[in-house]
Length: 222
Image (cartoon, rainbow, N blue to C red; front, side, top):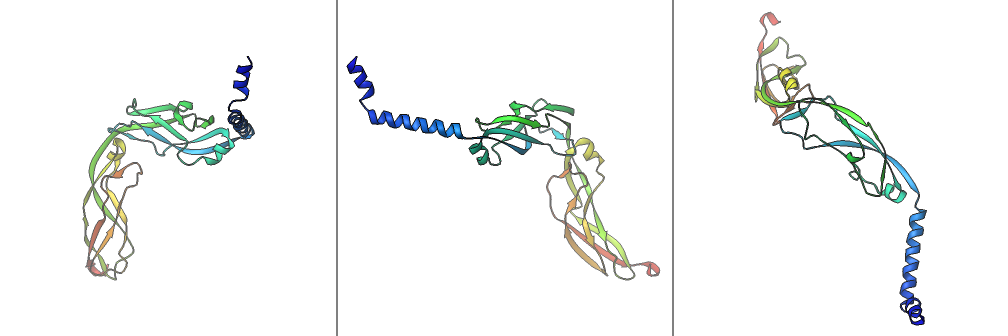
């Protein structure tokens, strides 16, 4: 028995003492670390989206996430540490309601989810469509005295657009950024960009548009 006690208490005494001191210090540090909460605005990430579907909702969704945990971790949080993900694998055209809960939130393991807002949201989906549309220039200003536009040429004259089917079908043409023809008397070219009024419809391969304007004298000076 004495030999056992001697082995336990005496051998490697200083190593054991240091271990006890370090363990105690770590426990005290953790015990004294206050708990804090923070609210973070996080964009909702969509996974497994089908190549044949488009989101047909006017705004993109973000969530407001409140988390609780040791203050030292809260202060070290950086963008990307807290993420909200939604799986779109089972989605079909139409309107779908999504629930947001703890299983959608990815965050450091020592943090606790307090609240997520909204807890539900809706998105509409439509099949993806691409088609070509004409490019129509927009003009501002007045040409030189007695002149009017005889013709204009856009290069390229058509562009390809993509988006939700019903929105793409509603696009009659793409417009250019305004071209100022103030005081123009003859022929002039401008390099500008095309634009679409619907933010959910995009140009497939955006490229500069060269607009060439040719003036002619108006009849009777009008």
